[in-house]
Amino acid sequence: MTEEFDLIDIDSLLSDEERALRGSVRSFVESAIKPNIAGWYEKAVFPLEIVPEMAKLGLLGMHLTGYGCAGRSAVDYGLAAAELEAGDSGLRTFVSVQGSLAMSAIHKHGSEEQKSEWLPAMAKGEAIGCFGLTEPTAGSDPGAMKTFARRDGGDWVLNGSKRWIGLASVAKVAIIWAQTEDGVRGFVVPTGTPGFTATPIGPKLSMRASIQCDIELTDVRLPADAVLPGAKGLRGPFECLNEARYGIIWGAMGAARDSYLAALAYARERLQFDRPLAGYQLTQAKLVDMALEINKGFLLALHLGRLKDAGALQPHQISVGKLNNCREAIQICREARAMLGGNGITLDYPPLRHANNLESVRTYEGTDEIHTLILGNRITGIPAFR
Image: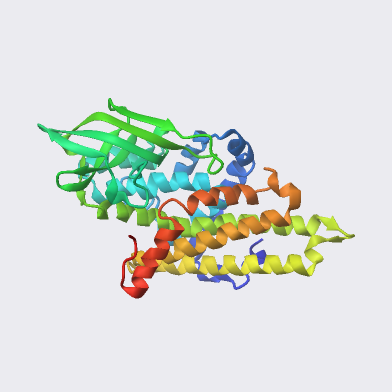
């Protein structure tokens, strides 16, 4: 299967250990996700039963060290993200929200007590986390958030709303970002705390095998030690967002590859005018264009992963990967759907499901427009966000 899309021997750039990790995740996706994803997607069900299996593979917080986390490399994490998203974006999103957002927030910015309390359980899948940053009127501009945390004696009291928060209704712990008199701070909020309410958003046309929620915070009272001591200002959540954005660079290419392979297999088998579709020049041109972009996308992801492992990855470089690979992946999935004809609108084939999911992926963790402006600022030195 590799030679059908790896035209330039990208595999030769990976170590034996990296290929083995990729193979184990691919096997999990082939056995546990692909046979079931159409049903989960149609019924809009997130399969909680596979969380323990993900934990056993070391996928939860896999790039973090200590506290029961796998301590794998950035490239390992990217390879796993690509395989998971070849199954479904919603399931890669679970790993991202759990590990790159909620666990990373605690790992990067939490106290030793917070790390010891939550990270081992989250790595085992025994506690699910969520990351509450986006609000109904503050998406691309998180500095406009209205959620506020005020001091009341030795406690904190939170009030506000969050929207599009992955996993919130099944989470045991929420990382909530709020304005305070001293700027934006992060808080570790057990979801059983009185005043915390999470409501799943639906119906959805994208990310159906995933959970996104509205959160309402009504006089949520927390002890003084609920605050993340290492996070002050928007830099705290942005560092976590960059972890999630990095995973998307790989994940989007996984969805693209799966759609391409589905179109290729269909084109070889489907007869029109007494010959397979794959034998027509227009079909081959489409397949070649897809394969070229997939190869370039994986090369970009791998380069950024090596930079990240070397401690040299810069935020604008993450924007390069997120913008390019999401944009190319969604086009590949749409083209693959078109190659399937009418059959492509059914859940028997993955391209339209992937394309629908990617509408969300290109929106969250920074829209196409935001990443374009980040890069425009980098090129010109002039911020044009307003």
